[in-house]
Amino acid sequence: MTDTKQATAVVTEMFDALEDRRIEDVIARLDDTVIWHNVGLPKVRGISRVGKFMKMLAKPGYGFDVTIHNIAANGDIVLTERTDVLIWRRLRIEFWVCGTFELRDGKIAVWRDYFDNVDFFKGFLKGVLRALVSGNT
Image (cartoon, rainbow, N blue to C red; front, side):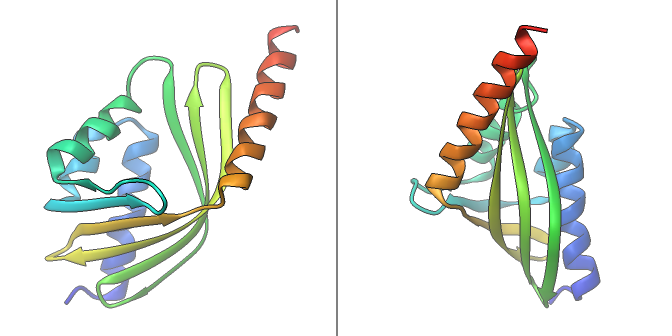
């Protein structure tokens, strides 16, 4: 069992690496049999499949930002309340996410995110409006 300080560090370091486009560091924090589940969408299973999605965020014109508002752990389980930002060129889609991370041997074995589709859609619309306004200045 991982202690809570170490468990939260694994998750925050993974997000730091994702923001900085250090995809190999992201992948290094994932268990080989990782399951990534955005609830309501199909599960992505295995480090190679999850890694493909992470690598997409590091392509030119794409990106990811995150603000962790709250983080808590109980042994190998880490809960996050955060704002994620998906970036595509000038478009920034900000939306609220609650995530559950299950660690196995110090690596993320399950990454489950819950978010409201309406909140995501609002973030998309706001992002489009911001991109249009910034494109005209």
